[in-house]
Amino acid sequence: MHTSSHRLPARARAQLIATDVSVMRGATPVLHHVDLTLTQASRVAIVGENGRGKSTLLHVLTGTLGVDSGAVQSVGTIGVAEQEMDTADERSVGEAVADAIAEPLAALARLDAASHALTDGTESAAEEYAIALERVEALDAWDAERCVQIALEALHAETDLTKLLAELSVGQRYRVRLACLLGTDDDFLLLDEPTNHLDRSGLDFLTAQLRSRNGGVVVVSHDRALLSDFAETIVDLDPTPDDRPRVYGNGYSGYREGRLAERERWEQEYERQQDERTRLQNDLSAAQNRLVSGWRPEKGSPKHGRATRAGSLVQNVHRRREALEAHALTVPEPPQVFRFPELHTRNGATLLSVENVSVAGRLREPVSFSLSHRGRLVVTGPNGAGKSTLLRVAGGELTPDTGAVRKSTGTRLGFLRQESDLPPDRRASEVYHTHVETHVSDGTVPSSEAVGLSQLGLLKPRESGKRVGELSMGQQRRLDLALVLALRPHVLLLDEPTNHLSIALVDELTEALGATEAAVVLSSHDRQLLRDVAGWPSIDLSAESAVPVH
Image (cartoon, rainbow, N blue to C red; front, top):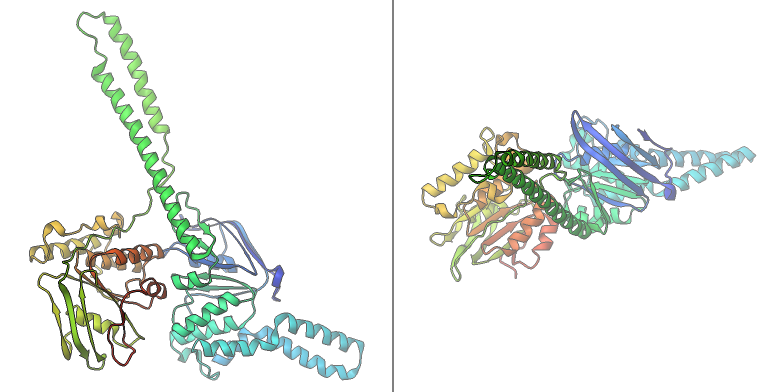
């Protein structure tokens, strides 16, 4: 059930409590015994891979989705922005703003009417004015319109109030809605992937608003920088040994430390139970072997000794079998761990050299860089500056209009493109094995250096058996990454490598990129990834001359 309160902000009394909430989708549990308490000061992030119930939990908290068991109680007002938007909205920007702050506007209108009625000098007029003034102050109505206008401008949203929402792009409509929510004064603000469609300045404004807001905030996001900058509590819906979600305090760093510790305990307990089951199985096998042959007495022994010994051995087998059957495996198998392969290069050799390359209309200023053993380079710049173009030129997919690209003999390039072009009708394992066999047969890579799909820990066996079109975006991205790593490249060209990947995998990938002997060229808008590689040399394509900066 879900109980909700009045529409006036409750301020310090505000609370949003989920108690032992479970939600089923058919026979599949989506949320499993969730407990969460939110107050005016809460700063909470909900994380987890696709399909783990993040948006479902948001809908449960707002009361738009019922629960199969448990309860949700709320005191105060709730503003919510879902990830998907209504494309048939016929309102203007001004009407959307007016609807968002309807309560404050109505309160101001009531106060205005009450102030004019004061001229009557009646006791009832004075009482109405006092009530109207109290409501205006409770809603902070004086600043409502100005706050929304500030948010519209800061998010680079449409500020022409006459424009129709239906005529705006998806990104513009989203920014208008987000501005309306940030400009209001609800007790709780619930946002689903709010960093979509925002540029750097918009992200900075959003982060500052979430941190300083006078009310509780719950955000579903994969944006690790946002989590690091604002979240104090993180709810992790990814699989756990008992299938219950985990709640971590101490912000993003506390979540990372807690998740690693949880994973280690899970693996240890799983291994302990597997070892105990193996021991019981071995004991049963040994008892069965003794029953078959080990009890036979030596020649000359009395016949009744044989029968006596047989009975005790049969009982022993029964006891061993009962012990094995009674041993329940209470801990499921832990999720796979990403295993980045060893990528060896040659010391002293220049692996890849890019000299004064440019592409008309796409990469205007000449760019130069060279990479050798453990070389590192970050390519930055706004959309349209030519980051993907530069990586395609470096990878040999695009011929530059000026300059040249040189690759030393025997150097293998691995190029992770921003967009996937996997064949949807072929099985993931087939795509992978064909890719490896093709490059082994043409001599690109020795068969001894090829990497098996299962070795990487990127796809589970049941996932690798699916057709590509049946995989989620995240699973397809994992397959793309597996194809790049399969041939142990000496140079990695990675265009937005964190797209569609889980937080856990991105953390593991980032650590691996810092340690690998291969040369790495990285292009990304991922703010946390850019922070993590802040010490790498970089090229800024928004600068007048694109040269490496150390």
